[in-house]
Image (cartoon, rainbow, N blue to C red; front, side):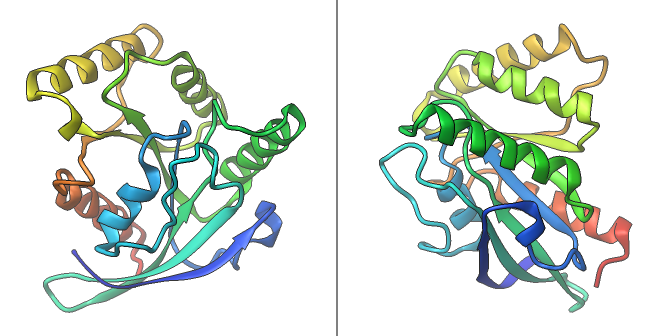
Length: 209
């Protein structure tokens, strides 16, 4: 699948303000400073589509991007890519943190055209409780998701494999079946084709065009 165009549509403070749910939607979320904006820019082959920042917690709204993709057959598909606020540490007040948490929960539970939520995990770190708790919530809410391990270029390959295995082992403690997962690097574009192929396959199942 080739990305033909990627354009910002709108930033929304609640799921009710989001665009009409008339296209397949794929959202990306993770702890602050996990490399979400860089990953989105890498996927869309754009340097500045999603705004990157050295300050954790920069994204505080639901950001929609309209994507037009094309398969080898020439058939085009229009879908939404969504950049969600991070969870966990962010330089915001306790009240703002609660508001962000409520906004995220309302979106992932009530957005009817959300096909898949991609949860980003930093491969530089040991398994983080915040990530495990959020994933547990997704299970309770029955939200379809996949894991995206980021920043794999920051480690030696053996260390990345070890970190991924550690995280998956923690999930096995509570999950009978592991979710799909991808190992990525925004710098080296590792995992880009695999992620786009996965999204394309989900679009095909929906008959999206």
